[in-house]
Length: 227
Length: 227
DNA sequence: ATAATAAGTTAGATATATCTAACAAAAATA
DNA sequence: TATTTTTGTTAGATATATCTAACTTATTAT
Image (cartoon, rainbow over all chains, first blue to last red; front, side, top):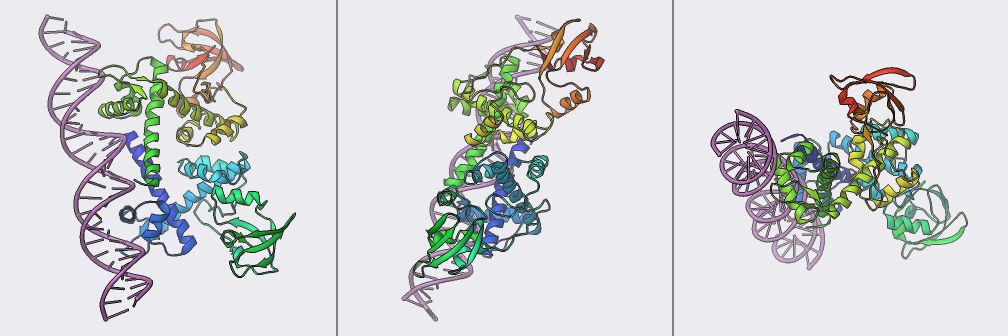
């Protein structure tokens, strides 16, 4: 097999592998244990596909895999995954801060650029941005070694009537959700006051800035992280 | 076949196809007719691989292919190829002008980013750069419709003793060659005066700016485009 | 405890871009 | 013109990530 062939295969390899590793990393953080089924749903792949890839990644010492057990990243896998997430989040920050995109536009672009192989490219972004610790959605950016220190945020939905909180991050970076927040004038670092919580459906009425009274459904309150 | 699978396959497809189209476009501009052999050399793939891809691209109406004949892009193929080259060259310009890379560092990064699918991303670059017509190596950037208007440059090696010329573009964007030019203090828009041409090996002695007498081999003079 | 459902695996099929080996055509050379 | 070399094609193999169908294990509900 010659050079360019290897180049492609390597690219393809890394593209696919990187998506498994990244998804496994993110799912672990969201839910703790991650099953083959969870991965298959999130990646929109059939379960046998995931099973066979887990075997392959286990061979490469990137995941711990035992039949019928949840899957875990190895230390190498963790480092690799964090590296991709670093590239993704740096890119998002660059797209917003340097190129002037809205926070709702950047996820899909970063999803592609995160696979670029060029340390200097991401180092330059990092330097231009002044070594940011968070992306435009409030998610922490892992450092070059792959260490990630996430401040402990609470869900807005876990707050009680009368509390005050600052909106620090979103648990969903989809364009649809972020457009909704834009339409409500909700951006990061906004100070919120919980006016009331409806026990029936968990919806909340809050006030912030020039908004005296906005009602958010439980679905939305579950996606807002505060401190 | 489901969604993400299609996503990957589409990506792979486009990555590979785009490289064939781009290479065919560039080779046509360099040499006129392009053979399967030319493509196979440039892409570092074996000839049967290229033959079979030509058949596939012909089915998709992207190239004109007849057995044992040179290959040509169709109008669609031409448009596609120009679009990729536009993305490549815009990216190079962005890397140099906005991110501060040297002209010798950007080719490999742009080679990866040119495959990103996001019209807004490249539109934004274009806008930030003020709709540039040339990349950092002096190559023309095709417009959004894929039209490319290249000014007619001459090779420095075609100039005669006593002539004056302005260095406008390079015919080789490799890091190695550009580092050599950097070491000679040769950058675009530099005014040159040809002091002498050695008939034996075609090497040239020129002066420019604070360099009173520099000798360039024929190999180098063949890669410098002037007006 | 048993039956039903969900999750996971195995085996085998498909599609893709690549390769090698063998053969055919075209071009260059003697 | 005949021969050799280069170029190009065909056929068939390989590797990869995906899929479906059939089967197994684990979990949930009755």
